Image 1 (cartoon, rainbow, N blue to C red):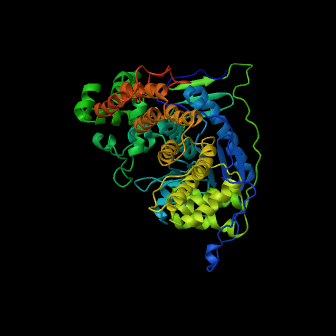
Image 2: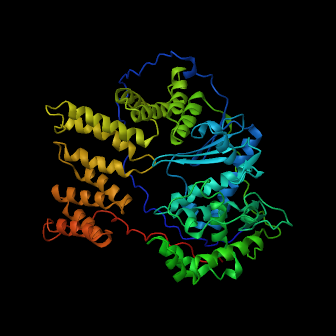
Image 3: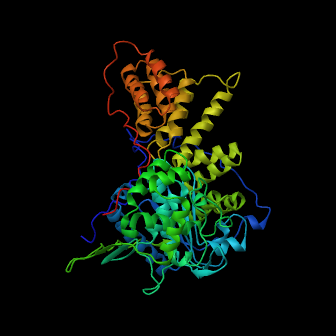
Length: 568
C-alpha cells in the first residue's frame, strides 16, 4: 500500500442517498408521434460550422476536449490517479462519485476558453485559467490549456499550470459535494489550495508541501506569491462574501497560508485553536473577539505571524513512498477516446455556457446541432430545459416529450415535463385550478416515476408529488406513500417536506409512518417554531399509534461542519 489514510478534515456529508423502488415507467407511449418544433435559420451566425472536439467518459464525468488525443489521454490518466490518491489521503471522498452530471471541458485552441467567461474582457481571460460552474443540478469545470502565463492581481505573472488549475476546481467540487452546508469562503479556499498542492506519481505522494526557493517554487505557492506583498486585513480574510480580485488581489493565497499555518506550521501549535475557531465559525459570525478567544491573539498579532510565515516557512508535510518491491498506485484503465458527436459538443458546451451566464451563446450552441438534424435524446432534454428557462413553454414541452419518449437520462427533464403536464391538465378545468382526474394524475405521475430513478435526487420532485396528490381525485395507495417516504429519508433536513409527508400520512391513514416522521421533526427541527408545528401535528395522530414505519426512518441530521481533526 502506497499510503495510509490521513484525517485532514471532517466535512459533513449531505445525508442519505436516494433510495429507489421498482423500474422506470415510460413517460410517453412508445408509439406516439411527437411533432418537434421547427426553426427557420434567418441569420448565418446562428448556425456555425460543427466544431471538432474529442469525447470520453470516466465514471461520473464526461470529458469534452479540443486538446490533442495524447494530451487528453494524459489528462484522463492523471485525473484517475488523482482520484485514487484522494481516496487514500481523504477516505470520505470514496463516497464522492458525483450524483450530479459533471462535465470537464479542456480548451486548448484559440480562444475556446474565453467564450465561457462572462463578457469578453481580455483582462479576465489573462487572470484565470479555470472556471467552476454549477447550479443545483449540474456542474462544469472548464480548463484553459492554451494560456502560457497567468496574470496575478498586481500585474505580475507566473506560469499557467492547467493541471493545478483543474485540481483547484476538482477539490472545490468535492468539498461542496461533501459539505452539509457551504463552508465559509476563506475556509473553502484555504482547503482547496491545500489539496491542490498535492504532488504524486505511481511511487510517491507529497501532501501540503510548498517550494522553498532552493528546491524550486511551484505554481501557486503562497510563500512565493505573498513574499514582499502586503496582506489583506484579517477582517477582510474572514469576510462572509469572497472579495473580488480588485478588492483583495492575493486573498486566496492568504487563505491558503492561514490554513496551512494552522494545520502544518510552527510545530502544529495552532491546530487545536484552529479546530475551535472553525467550529465556532460554522455557528456564529467571525469577529476579532471570537478569534482572540480561540487563538489567544489579536488580528494584528496573527497578521505579523503570517508575514513571518511567508518569509520563513517552518512546517511539516506528509510524504508517502511505495515500499521496495511494491507497485504503488494502480495504473488506471485507458479511456475510450473518440470524436465527439455534434450533439455532444452542442449539449456540453451549451450547458456550460448557460451555467456561466452566457444565455444567448448557450442557446446557439444547443440549437445548432438540432437544426443540422441531430435528435439525440440528451440534446432534446437540454433543449427542452433551455426553452423552458426562456419562457417558451410550448416548444419546451415538445422537446421534453420527445426526450422522454427516447428515454433520455435527465431527471430534471422528467420533473419539468410532469409540471407542464400538470399545468395543462389544470388549464382544462373551468377555473384553471380544478382537480386532476385519475387519467390526468397518471399522466403527470409517469415522468416522476422515471425521474426518481435518475441522478441527482431532487427535493423538488417529492414536493411536487405532494402537490399532485393534493389536487387529485385519486386515493393514494401504500406504494404511493412509500414513494413519498423515500423523499423523507433522502432529505431528512428538509423539515417542510417532512412535515407535509407526515400530514399526508395522517390524512390518508398511514398514521404509523406519520408518527415516526412527527417524532423526527420534534427531535431535529432546528427552530422552536418548527418544533411547535410538529407538536401541533402530533395532536392529530390517532391514539394509540399504528405500527412502526415500514422500512428505515429518516436518518438523524448530521451536525454542521466540524472541521478538521488533526492530521496524523
